[in-house]
Image 1: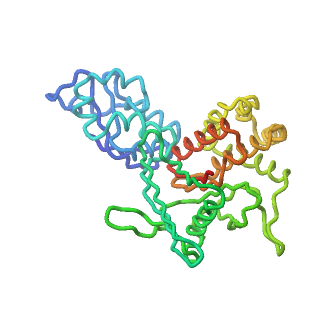
Image 2 (image 1 turned 60 degrees about the horizontal axis):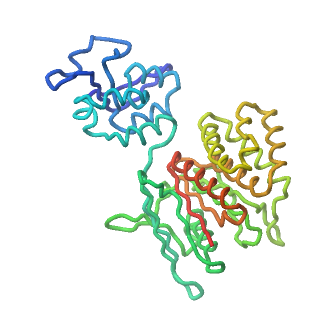
Image 3 (image 1 turned 45 degrees about the vertical axis):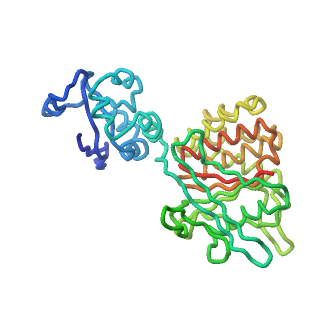
Length: 377
């Protein structure tokens, strides 16, 4: 076991944690460090290594430059970085006895590699939404549990019921419970073995609500991008602002402009751009989506990107435009530990497109360690 202190090209130090290094044919009679020269620029082909904690790969995947990351991982012949090495070391005793003593192949192939490629470490979620009973409404208690490593994924939960039973009301109360917890009878609780305590402000880093119904009387809160003013909040939907007479709905021109702007926001950094590309590739399992050739936008910049995105959006059906707006805005807004609330997504989508959207959303949440709750009839 070795402790790693990494300095990047700017001289910034990173305490990486532990790494284990072995070599082909190694036995318990020979310690790895005894085979090293006093200094070296990289391990020879007889060696291989693996970090012992997800923090190790989180630093490499999310905090240092690509140049530093590649030089470091190649120099240590890391098996998470170079997938081909795993097959050649699996039969080595040192690999199974020492390098895998505290980590598993599941972690290497799953969490470690995903984080190294820019994802965030996954955590479990276990929380409860509770509404106290009143003279007009019954009490509600709903439990949500997300297992980070479950297959299939458990990061999307659905509230199912016939029209008129109050599903959308519950979703709106969830928004209020996070944004204005002192002004509502509903609240979220953390479910632990010995207690159920109110969630702290750090439990969800941000909240995104998606609703395209023109008839829901709920008015979403004002968007908030400043964490010092409370939980970050973003709204994706039809409603614009309220005046004395009620709610104003966004025009088709406004929605198209939002869609184009959201695509542009996804292109401001490589991480978001990659997540947008993955989401679009998933949506292209729908044939009508595939013919739009949205990945062609990845090669354009600024004004050319805006013009071509505008052209494509104008040619879309309302359902496809809603999906593109929603997934692009989600990619640009969903960060680590985001809660996404979606009101009846199937209202605007045919089954194949809904299925593709659900898969794209699940993949995005898995990448960002988020969770979604939607309502279905």
